[in-house]
Image (cartoon, rainbow, N blue to C red; front, side, top):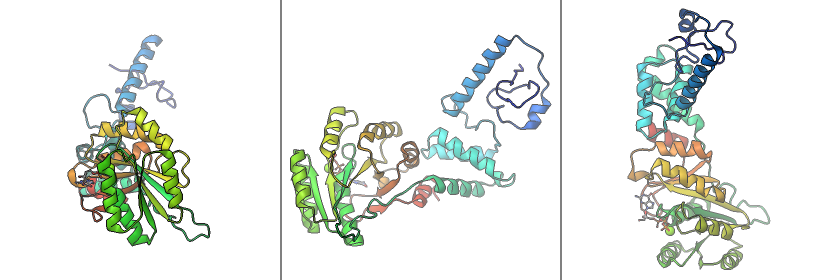
Length: 340
Ligand SMILES: Nc1nc2c(ncn2[C@@H]2O[C@H](COP(=O)(O)OP(=O)(O)OP(=O)(O)O)[C@@H](O)[C@H]2O)c(=O)[nH]1
Ligand SMILES: [Mg+2]
């Protein structure tokens, strides 16, 4: 059943026969081959067009159908396979579609049938997109009135914040020769305070355990001669809005505060999405992703980076303190996802 495309292909002089949403941007050969449709009542046309556009929107947002076919662009079996592989490695469907679409667009006819070339192309594209940052950059810079940088780790329960604080402290001390202090906030959770106190003792750095905003201010005042203060917070459920707001209030007004959101790579993608949304109130400067050693599906890292637009800071890859931490790199993300 032919349909007019007048409202989509604005540049077209003649109404062309369309092929549903897959026809959009389709090859001109296909469009020329189709016969112009006879005149039809306008309202009916409009209804069809609206239905078509709905299809396009659904397809773009990945809610309709399970077909891996990217809409309207050059496709090859190999590109389709690449898209399926991306989805299997946890990349959200709409991102996978974008990547493959772009690859198909940029690659030559022969390349499009070459799996290795496709992999390389996807790798290059993802490398361009993934953003990383070193959160210790500029900390302890040798300016005259060097002020203390405070880094707070926030995130859901049990993702590895306390162990990671110790790992980052160690990186700061060993690699950057920083004077580091540790503070545990919410010390009502006795075990957490003990845990961090133990790490502080092993590393020989000053430590404070505080409960209130006043105590925190006092501890930061005491640590004013240090380059870096790492602030451990207890995990909070993203659903516990009150607790999140209370923490934000406590952190409010701290000078030179950098906040990092920590999540585990083992968390379901949809939950990660919600976590990122709820923790936005802390204005995190980047993401720390833990437990890469406990999963083999890494697409969530790419998804989260794309959705939040926050740079990746660190990956943690095991329980050993201080060894099991890596500075995030785009290469590593791509290696993990494409299994290179
Ligand atoms: N496999 C693995 N385990 C990790 C990693 N990071 C932390 N853990 C473990 O996860 C558990 C929780 O770590 P914590 O550092 O206490 O987590 P937390 O976020 O401080 O927890 P709360 O303070 O309760 O919110 C511990 O057993 C850690 O050893 C990691 O990268 N890989
Ligand atoms: Mg903790």
